[in-house]
Amino acid sequence: MLRYKVYLAVDNTAIKASQFISEYPKPAFTSLLTVSFVLWAGVFSYAEFFADEKPKKNSVGASNESKEAKDLFSYSFTNKEHLPVKYKADLSYQGAEATLQGTLTVETTNTTGADQDKIYFHLYPNQFKEPINGPDWEFVRGPSPTTGSIDIQDIKVNDQKADFKVEGTILEIQMAQWKDKTYSKIDIQFKFQLPSNYSNSSYDYAAVWLGNFLPKQAVHDKNGWNLDPYSPIGNPFYSETADYDVTINTSAKYEILSNAEEVNARIEKTDEKQKYHVSINNVRDFSVVLLDKQYYQAERFMTQNQTLVNVWYRPSIDKQQTANKNAMGADQSIDYFEEFFDSTLPYKELDIIRTGEGNPQMAYQGMIFSAGYNFSDNSYTSLSMTDGVIRQWLSGLVGSQGYKEPWVNESLVSYSLKTYMGEKGYTAKSSAEDQLKQQEEIARIQKEGQYLSSPLSDFKNINDYIVMMNLHGYNMYAELDYLVKDGKVNKALKTYVNEYTNKNASGHDVIELFEKTGHPQAKGYFGGWLKPEVKE
Image (cartoon, rainbow, N blue to C red; front, side):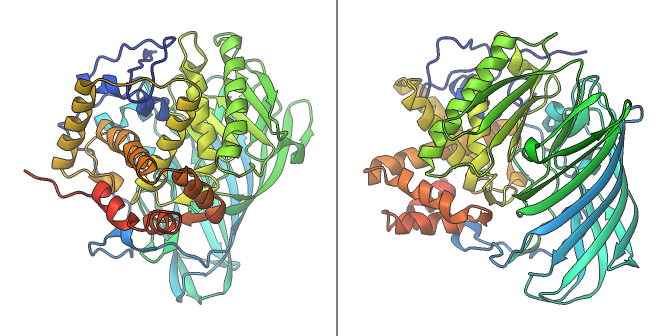
């Protein structure tokens, strides 16, 4: 199997870590972007960046979103009337066929503000129904990919058979006069053939990891139904908080873990089979892993506020010392960011799961999927774990429209991580030449029509996205911190986390919050960074 070497490049504006080895052989400016690579733990270690190639566009089916151009960061479009959707799944996993089959019952209330005749769900695994080509998908495909998808077999709405259609990653269900403020129950029978790749839902010889795998009700906000595609760039999984009740029937050989606290799980076992049942409320997605017991063991730490950190790794090929370092790094990061955000994690368990060899890191509330190279000798995983911990708050507790407005949480993640690194002694001054190279690269990207405010679809490649979100986004908040002083940026960030916990925030909400917390000219300031006037 093709193995990819982990590269690390040094961003002199943020870090000089002598234990890391910088060997990234791409264009010269990437040697200035270590933190961007840490933030994308998994992408940057092996992704092929082709700045001159256009990304492959993917059909996602019908949408009733407004098509007119809008200034997305100047007004709030989130749905304040959202009520948590309730998902109840009864599933069976067959390891020999790598299939997951069962029924999903969805209890949902129409909070759109209008009567609806359709409802939409995301079927993210359908992105891999056909082979995926193009450089942007290289890091998701992995070396030996196979296809997989969700086959919708039957749907009932309020116990009546319903018409539906699937186009790309979107499921459209006909609703018979779904009036505003009324409740509906939807039963979906499906069979999921897992793909073999480096996506969020896949498997290998030792584990099955499942995230963003259940049919997920699309978010309806002031733009209408959000039917954005599965993108290889950024975090496109826009969602509302929901409640999950999940049962999985499978072989007894697996250790089953989910992002719910395991103390709440009920497990019934025989010699060969087991039934796992758990429930969890107020999370943006349900994630679960099936770990072959002969390949896995755990390292554990307890935080100051009694959050149990479990790191699951493969001792036959991974390093126990690195697994221990990962557990300790996550533990210390939780302690730090509970104070930094003035917010205690509402769940008392965080599972860090070693998945495939090259999976891009993915953080769910209460669970982080992390690649095999993060458990090797030359690992820089303590900061990768820190990134996953930050996302327990930013993207987890506080959501945003990550496809249309990726800057909302991504630039705050970068600012939070670099602040942590600075306080832990990783900072170093950069030369004037390095700073000039960075600014020249940012200017080049903006001249090509890619801005901090751009949606994912506007970015030509992962590299340009990383530069804008993680370097330029950090600089935006670092300069604001310098201008307003007195720790007002951190005070605003604390307010942001506490005010929008279990909600979604738009760019407008961020700017308005900063206006109220010490920077009355915030709209003009953010506007100049988000989409400046570019001179030819």
